[in-house]
Length: 307
Image 1 (cartoon, rainbow, N blue to C red):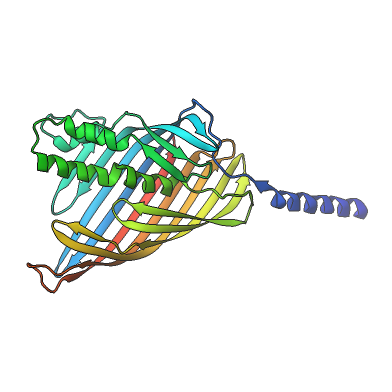
Image 2 (image 1 turned 45 degrees about the horizontal axis):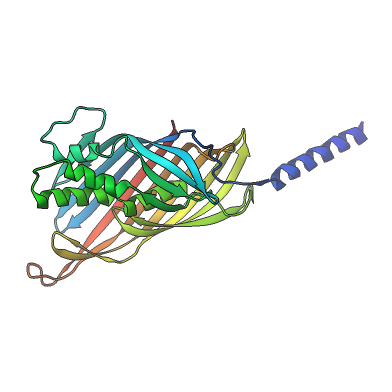
């Protein structure tokens, strides 16, 4: 009996070691012609301290994005992509935006009509099997068409609205935003417990570098569970806002957890949290010769769900 018990124990140990030694080829294995969707909900709060005044900007985005593989370019995946639904709420001291693609749009609501111009319309996203965005085609032209469709709108107003939309959904901004969610996989197969890193350049609300360190923490039930810990650092580039030169000096952390399918690598669920703080340096000008250092904090939470 003792020999049998010992033999069973040895078999158990061998099985456990075998499972831990198994490598996993983590990547996107999407089927041509099949729709892959996720629901995204992002809430971001930006707080700026202007002397005795504290300004808060609240941003909320909700929506379903659809990705359909249509072809390959070598090992890269060509995706026909569209925003199927979208809700955008921005609240600040300066302006407010409230848009819901499921609700009727009034002709005089210019911002809503521009957003409507990109809903349900396809553009192209090309990604590597690891999720790095190679290029995005068609989205800038789509935004141009939406602005032109406004017709008699004052040209300066139209250009400002285009700038606002492009800052979130233009090719440059969208590349970083999509890569922040999609670029999660390593170049080589990994075992449970092993780690790898990814780097993304963000160019939306803030221009920053995101460096993530991922770990495969579990592989069971035909799913992979991954945890990511990241560092965010602004690039220190100057920007002109309302005619004033500013530079952003911010840094922070990101924590992420994704559960994905082993079959195709697509999302089952996910969550990201970001906490960023630092200062915005306003250069001296005629109205403010000495310039100003503005403390700023940014907190955001993103959740993903398969649709």
